[in-house]
Length: 286
Image (cartoon, rainbow, N blue to C red; front, side, top):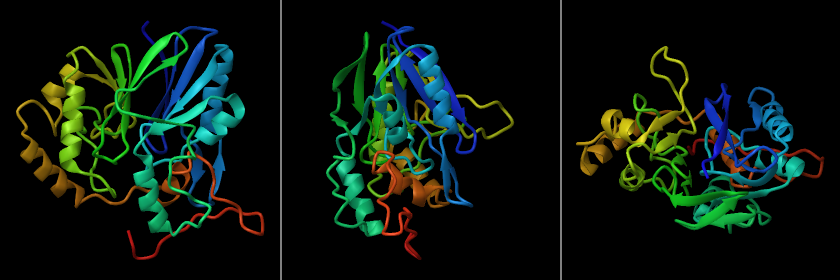
């Protein structure tokens, strides 16, 4: 059964989130949800997530899964909020404890934060099959950008997270803790081994020109035109390019708050004795 896909674009962080469902009145999953965050005031809001909730309610869908492709460094996840409103299970790749352990050390998180993946309801193994109502789905491990990246396949559609972007933008950085450019190349080619007509849905778009925002490509288009990994680019060439390019990139605007939320599956840090939750900002570390 082919999936129905509703796309939601969040323009502040250039993030694309999806509702994937089998049929009206059936079941759905949300992929890479976004929580609105104002870094100037430290305030969160749920306007973007509420649009997805409204769509799900209008279609009379049951939310079964909230699927994260990885612990994002560029936007906060609304997974915890969505689960509180609609139910469902929050899932991510089984290597997420590696990411949690790294950032527990960076942010000096307390004993309350145990880096064992238990903040999430479910951890997917590579090639694990699961259901979204009448839809068959598969989790595909794609490490490189982070150790725990996953892609999600529904029939001839794959949601690829941050492994690749549109062909004129290229590929994800690999310089975050645990990232590895060689792993990223191999993960990308794992995806590019699918049939040429396979549809690939991005998690972000950063248009390099004045073209409209886009988020859908195909294996054939990526192999022919991706500026970083088109056919003919060797692994060593890619690794050299990626390492050199990553040295020129600044940290994402929301790196510090987003990681602290996203390793907790979208839940805020615990409140302190005054009833307020706080983000930590490490000084002269990043």
